[in-house]
Amino acid sequence: MVEHTIAFYRDQLGFETRWQQPARNPWSAIIGRDGAQIFIKSEKGVAPPAEPQAPSPYGLAAEFAGNGAAFSVLLNDTSDGLRGFEISDPDG
Image (cartoon, rainbow, N blue to C red; front, side, top):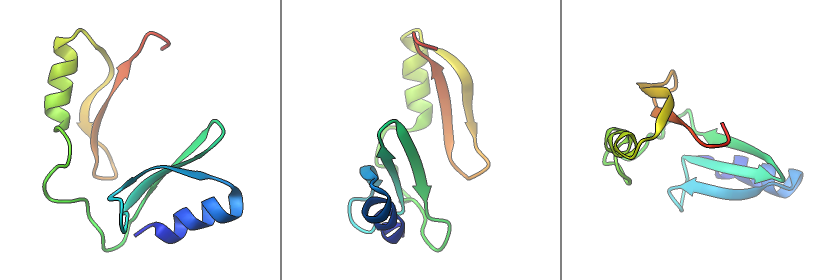
């Protein structure tokens, strides 16, 4: 769980929680302050839910490609066990 880490950044360094999963006892979170963001992920004893809580990366990549999106990084597995892709937006 990452609630102690969130509290540290929030209470001591002035960051805000912008997203966390799940809402209670989070195992990952995005915190931010001004233009900076930090992605926090638990490395011990906690895993993401077995069932996806959102559309699969495969489905989203196919949908976005069908809508004409240009990919700067194709769908792949990352070194930390996540799966994702990157899209080139109008601002690069």
